[in-house]
Image (cartoon, rainbow, N blue to C red; front, side, top):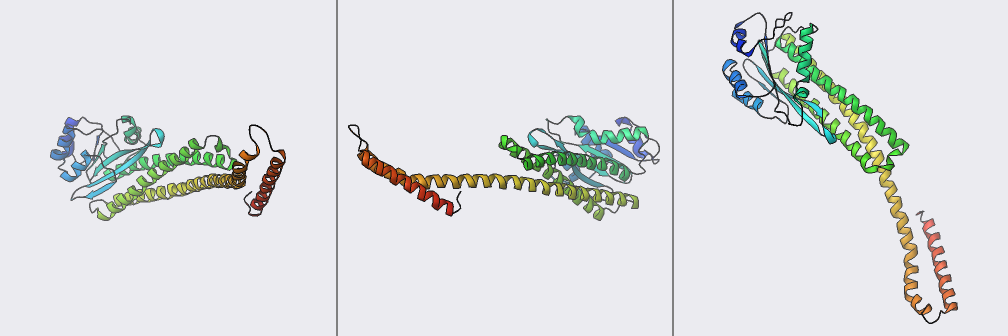
Amino acid sequence: MDGEKVLECDIAELPDLRRRSDGFLWLDIPTWSPAAEQILTEEFQLHPVAIQQARERNHTARVHSYRDHVFLVIHAPEIGTGGHVHYLELDQFVSERFLITVHGPLNPLVPMEKALAETRAVIRRLDAGRLQPKSPFALMYAIVSAVILKEEILVAELARDVGLLEQRVMAGSEEQKPEEFLTALFSARHELLTIRTMAAQGAEVYGRAITLSELAPKEGLRLMQDLLDQYERMTRISSSQLDFLMGVTEFYRTRTDTKMTIAAERLAVIAAITLPITALSSVLGMNVIVNERTMWIPLFILLSIMLTLSLILLRWAKRQGWW
């Protein structure tokens, strides 16, 4: 690529392309293989530690600056089943002359096209002439911006879902299936929290890359600074949405806990009222009502005492504010 013309070449042409000086090279590696490792080791002579990290799964974003290239690891979110969020790893080797992107390792549950969505979108823009990067840093900027845009779209969708959940809470319509509703609340919380984590780590990575990188041109530093700003903005947006969701969740849980407390108080009132009556009837009942005959006068007196005790206890509970 020279900023105006894009050529898609076979991997066998790589040595010749490396010797050219009329543009820069983009090598996209969808899946890791021994052949890919050999190319990165022998043809590009990349640092062994960076190659090892590109081979293995990285659970956090990373950045390493070397003499002639910068190695960066970022993640893109992919919402799975049950609120699980897959980490789609994208490793980048960027220098003044080339950009190498490595995808994965990938969870078997995630289709390959999901992992390649952002880079394939950039390729379509290149083919259509809508994107004409002047340097590997500009191409990296386009790819990472597509990743951030995906995060922004997911947060917008989650914000819509959270708004619907908030409406159900305010209307009290969540009481029909409280367990499912609480699961929906915490699933949305987990998804937002994961996206915010990815955005925050991306901001830290590009902030560190700007500090460490001495090989990036002035325009490349400006583009990385813009990526840092995008990641920081994404972090703030997802954090504010997460705060709103937590407020909805706390309101729902507080109202539910209040209902449980009121129910427990009423049960306590019932127990307090029935306990002395039960004790009185258990002691005297067997001596008043027997199989052979019933002592009506003592029975009437006993029932009167029990009714009086109930009324006294009810009045006392009312004064205590229990009901």
